[in-house]
Length: 297
Image 1 (tube, one colour):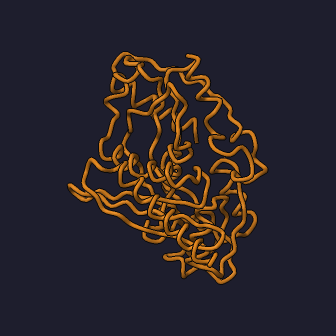
Image 2: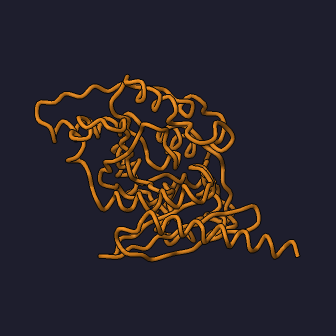
Image 3: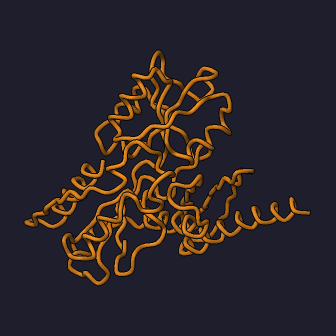
């Protein structure tokens, strides 16, 4: 996935800057190397980025391409993401196996097994279909698809954007069930690529500027502000999605504790994305705190 995304960005940079030739350098991270544990059980924040960011800081590379949803909310000093390319489909998709693809979650058989290693997806699926079971799964997209089908499970939950970037969009059409944010909130910034550069690297920023998409940038500001202030980390049971509505926007987010599920929405004016992402996180944290105080009485 990382290589496909990096290749996509490299082609876009070259197309926007005629005569420029990019060089791709592959850097293995802890998240790539450890495939036998769920993400929440090792490494904490940034298991897919630490080695790459070090290469960026030391000048071995000039640009790092990330899935923004896998990025910690805080960046190391000296690095920034000032350019945001156009967002792909932010939704989750259930790729179904065996028989006719489900048209809605209600079509899945009771007791069916859905593969996912994401706490965010698991807790929302449990609320939508508590009778379903989930099975942990790791590996690249092709590996997860193969493992889930060979195991005889009903399906595997994936990001639609990842399938599209890998050239597997046909699977969404042929046997996929797209889950709207109203059903399953995506990870903050899901479908957005993070283009990370050194602060003050004006040459690289100038090459990247034609790729910038302001609407996607505003969504990222809101959703990542929520992630930063909910303080759950990029693999916590939390999700957020920002809808742009003309001169306004709506930011919706959730967080699940061991006891309860909290989901709230706020609406603001364009230009206030980061402010309202933080406000939404603080609102949910206050709800959690107030219920905690009530239970202590």
